[in-house]
Image 1 (spheres, rainbow, N blue to C red):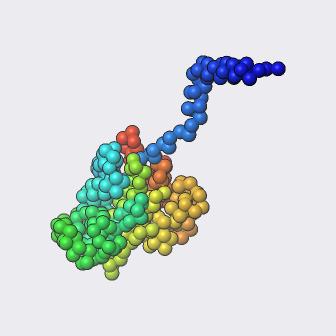
Image 2: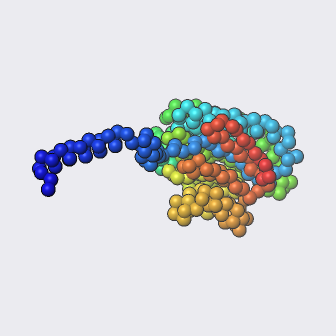
Image 3: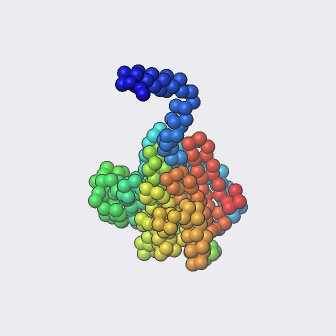
Length: 343
């Protein structure tokens, strides 16, 4: 029989042995415990994708301006990259890239826009902040050097989403924007193009768009699109570019900018449909975009393409025409610009 005093001594000895055992535990035991803890969430892969129009063009038809177009796209991607690399917002990156494309006479937006039947220029643009579901758009403006900038002002400085025509330009003046004369947008190439279309020498009406989608280091998505619409257009025709959900859309999961025959993109609410398939049907971004562009639109003879980016940094650029001017840049700063399908 163990006496109480003896029991107390044994308990003390056992406690001491336990303390020694814990102190002498191999160091890798603690390392294993630390390794078992959940890993910190990785930041999204940030970057930008742009397009400058899709169509059934030939290499010979663009040969004289191909290099200049690629250089301008490179400049646009570099401008967006610099914003993102410095920790700037996806909205700022989208705007910076599109302004450069609008200022170039090579694309159907801003300076290089196509001409209407009356020989004038009418411009449309939209921008959308996916993080807050805010959007701004302008349509049918005639004296705005950078419609994408005015679209952003509509989003941030007005209670509205879209302003059109004279009203949009009155708002621009209130915001301190300088309006430019129609002569600023005139280019000989567009004038000759309009003459060919009116003479029925061109089988298809010229159209095109510029656009950008971006994901910043904070995981915020944005999209923007700017265009002169369709050459020889009449009656104040408005395409899909300034219509939120049709040619431009961004949410917290997906950002899309479209280019092509705008009426088909409006009827199919293309940009939103792609993002809805990602959100509700759990389709991958690539699957959703390809189904819409290569199946839904093709079945209706609607030509064009999209650029799309998700909140993990995955992007896709499907098109159902001969080519689509497109480019991308990621955290490594490597810029890639392509034109044809097999590139």
